[in-house]
Length: 318
Image (tube, rainbow, N blue to C red; front, side, top):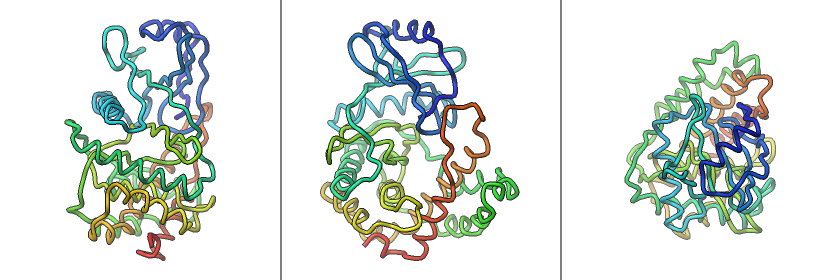
């Protein structure tokens, strides 16, 4: 989440009037994240999240993204439903940009999750994977290892070195990840971006999984590896936390046990996840406008995670 486009009070009031949600009381921009503009909307009836799609998202994918939210919510997953406007549409446009109004869910994103919280996240992820199996739409993952290595090449060695002198060495590592990428793993629709700021919790209960705008068809074990890389490290990304890692997988397997093939693949899948976030963070670092209400994130955090997975292999998930 972020704010790239600024909407005035009159624009927001006119937009909210297109929905049967009461009258606009307040709107506050949300600074977290890097891909879309977001506001916390309060009306005379309830709170909502308004999202304007800015970057990396093709509006042709919105039926998939928003339909998936409704499908998962209907299946009992802690996922916000889409608020349809008075004509029944799941999104609207202002100028050339699409917007959607989403249900607001209670909870707080944990900043220092404990094992009980991470175990609950693992179970919620497995619940989502199982519920999404009968979702009738598909979407190709356009951020696989080959794609993210291409993003790094587009950034260029000199630009990457301007972020950190060690960053260009990621090219050789990335080529090895691409060349050894596993296939034949069980698939579903995956979130592929389940960071702590995309999970809402009350205590150790997951009340919301949000920001599904990188969801796609893919290997469920890859999604688990993404979540491991996002949740199970210290603040610098240099050292994995074995208690958190064990809790994540234990929680996941309470609903969906992993196959031997999936377990064997986890270290390389996690390296691929790190490669993706190195690429996206580097691209954002170089491309984010100086006046955007958004915090740029350091790609080196995930370089350190990748090196941890390379050094520890299967023991990183023991």
